[in-house]
Image (tube, rainbow, N blue to C red; front, side):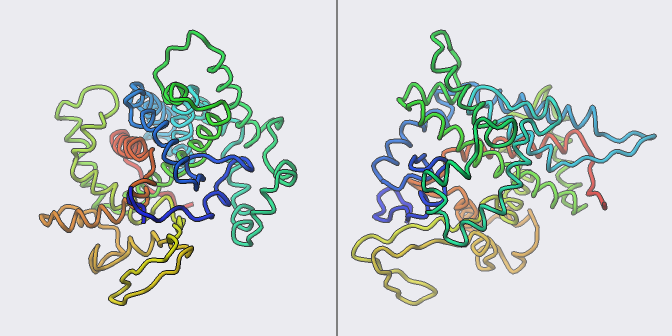
Length: 388
């Protein structure tokens, strides 16, 4: 359905549920195929690193702040037992990374060990409301401009979504006004490829919403599984320690090194499978004239205009792909000699990032941050899950 030349297209679900501002689309909400393709072309270089040479150093900067915060403030001592909300600190990490990548300036959560502007608190507070609106079919009403202005974030607010949006708009305006800005970051790449002021805002803000919470979910979900399984934790810790002792050098583990660590990558893929950060069915629309497909051995005709989606949790728990113990966290399933089996498992779990013409442009960035964060947490701590 998502292949480059597929006649399927995005369903109306995208622009009805994913718009940040009423009537204005970004790369994820755009259902017009030509406009979507053009926007991907405009943004690809910024995401790939070809025109964003500071990408990995920027991620490393905040991974360092993340582990320094843990070491300096939260490590227990022989005289003092300390606890830490790793989930919240991980949100600080991913927000700082994506805000720096997207706007050229971090929110500052890690440096202050606080939810600056109360963005996370605001997000948590509105999630129940958003879920209710989506489930009840009221989104069209809520996105009607007069209602949206009344109920949506107010950029004059002193905290929460509104203040963060106002800060983002100010940072973009500052960059557009500057004639001496020589930075080689994502925002600069977008500007070079012709995105307008409003396009820059919606695309950069989409990164904050979509890129921070998803990566944080992957990191903290995987770390929960690791810390809850002594055997896996010991095996991963041994690989991390051996890598450090083998001459890794100072600083954060390079992306190229992390991707070659067999057990680390197995743990990451298994955590990603067990707790996928995105579970929406992301429906596609059957082309006019319909399509004939085979479902569990039966030939089925899909009428044109039908919405077709998939269950991420259902796919990731298929026993014919992942084995009879598919409901268990077992990284070793990824370390087998059957390359065809591994390829099938990878292809299935990576549907979380989309596929083909709809594949997430931030896939490489997310996996880089995911790999580095899990490695460095294991390198600097011996953690356990709290009981209170």
